[in-house]
Image (tube, rainbow, N blue to C red; front, side, top):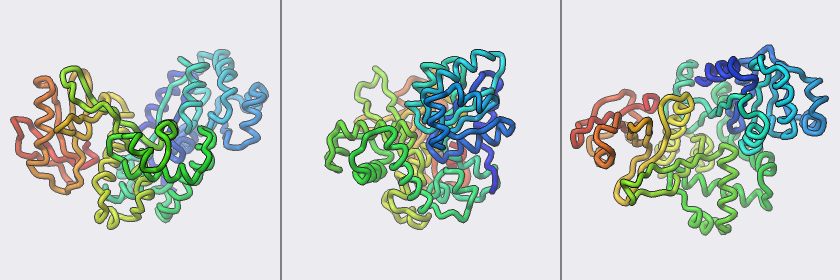
Length: 389
């Protein structure tokens, strides 16, 4: 098995040197446990996936912490929310010792509530997504962007090349439905929720319309809203907010829905390989979903700003990055060689933003190399491969 170095490793190590504890969140199977064990090999390890450990951590946390003294990695800590208050006491006994507790968890509400109530100011927070294309390439994995989009970012799929992606995602979906969903929401029919999940997949990279979604799957809008919240809380979907300001009142104010992992999206759409993707009517949505995931992973490293999209009645740009009054405008294009007309909308949107505020405009495409497109309205636009997004 090949270890894939994650870009966030330096961030986790830095936080462990500055705070008594570090919390690593993210969806299941994104590599949280492996990352914690790789970076902190001398820490003791306990997983609350084991019901006996979770029960003691919840019901008798003092005894649990005597059995498992720091330095300690606690995996899936959300299964024992009662432990957080006792961790606070333990940390406060030795506030001068950093990196004593490394906590991982895949359900954000329980984690964030525990952190905000008991561990605020005592722990650093990191959210881990699947492997980026750049991380795979640096690990020596030879893969095209199209193949990476179909297989997805779950580390195990790349550490075990013989693992069948469809079987992995089938098992992943079942595990998610049967375990995390039951913990987060009282669902009467898991079959209904799986149908709902597939309906969300069909709408990845589209404006979220809960009323239409509810009508199409025969559920109430309130149920759809609750289930959307569960998917977002468990890091299965991302709701990308629109950029808007008072200067442009016609902008759309509803978020766009994206599945967090393009591999899971392809599984739910029945896309098993690159040939399927090329022939699929959903290839544009899959590519945009993949690009969105790659951008989010880069944004996690900090320093770049915040990610939005732009849409009004006549123009849409897939991704807008805002930082300190400056903007990057980025469009995802399935094309291998975008041409000049593909950059026209970027230039039209740039004209609506403050003068000299747009720092970069690019079409994120399947081209192997970056190249400039003919200027539009005096704006410079580039076609760039996804790893240069």
